[in-house]
Length: 188
Image (cartoon, rainbow, N blue to C red; front, side, top):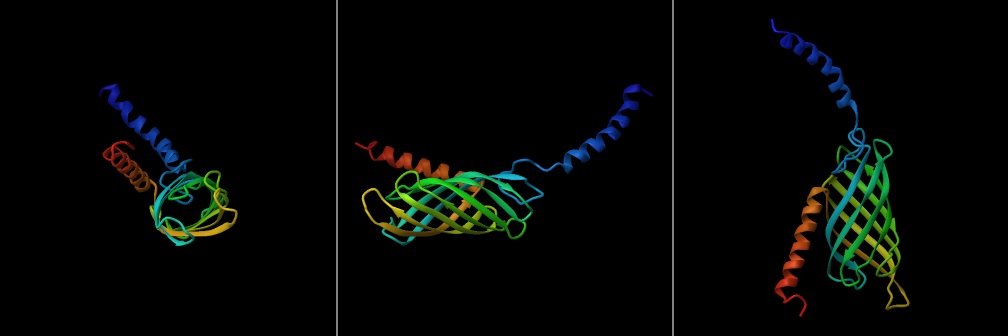
């Protein structure tokens, strides 16, 4: 019998414990998001279309939200993100986030932030996601805009996509804006 073939079963036998240990390790970072033990941390990539409920916002706005969260337990995650809206006021700013995992991939998200562009005040988010890639969200905010001396309550509600679907929707939206801009003569 050839020695190469005699070594092969030995190598296979030695690789089983290494493979088992590699499968026991939990990933440090996930995308899309999942609770522990599947993920210890994950990226936040959200994009959604919203309609105005209160305040004199544009009737439709687009919201983008990106960040990072850490699963601190099997049911809880905390992190930070940067929220931005594209509407008649274009408000954006950093936020702290909390996620409560309800089931396998269902969750409730809460966020509280401050705008750094477009206005001053408080931004917030309440989102219910039946699965990790789509959710219904409410974004109530109290804002003071540069053109006004009074604070306003602004609320929008909408549908958000998360993870790869959100990135795809953002890319398609960006492409649509470029095409619209080019077809209009490039702003001339």
